Length: 376
Image (cartoon, rainbow, N blue to C red):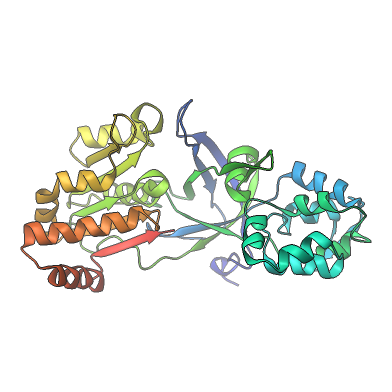
């Protein structure tokens, strides 16, 4: 069998961790990390614009608390995909113990009837509120008696732990045999208990150089650099939306692409949130990249990437008229909509298009592959 076929979503590669560092500074309202994995010997290949699937492990402390609350034996042996594991090992590496849903609550209630769950399952609003930010430990702590006879019956109601996809933040030309990610650590508090995103805190808190994590490459053919290296590109990526654009600028520089590179980046404060400043500064200084940075909270009024786009509207329009490709990565609910509205307004203001004509122009950009987005 060819090496390339060995590792995939169904059979992730145990990638050694090469390094983990924090990109945001002390006092930042955000916690963004940069993590590097080795792909040596995996046969896995990726292109700038692709994503990496990471299969996380649950926090061992959360697993221990859950087993204790359920009064189960952590050493009980379970069969997981034909492999014998202890209950503790299986709950750490194989089962989702954090995501509550109507289906999950119904399964729990069927296995271990609970008056509280009976009420919650009958009320859509209460169900949504109950599931938000809570996990199976919350359910276990609300039970007055032991709900499951053993670990096997408990694991039977659980879903398998799924992979999370992250935009790759490296070019294979710049880092042969490696893959890098730029990840925002998710942390929050519910019912007085501190919690975190399963995969983001797995990487931020528990992975160290020398550890391995299960990974695979997810191709994203709808987010690709222009085939012609002379074509200019405009990249809009606030926050961790900068991730795929690091792969883009590294790829363009490694391949000596002649086209211009313009990055719009935004975060709260320049002093603490300037991700990849050490890499961007020399590129800007040498003229290989144009940077427009929006520090939303460095002044009394908030400035976002779309505001900087408006300020540089005429020049953006000139780039687009010269054939530039436009890319956007980040929050789909607000940022992406605001950036698209700004693009339409530029088409009207500098292109002399009506509202309908501007919409048709943007649609044509999309069809031609000149307007691509990676939003979440």
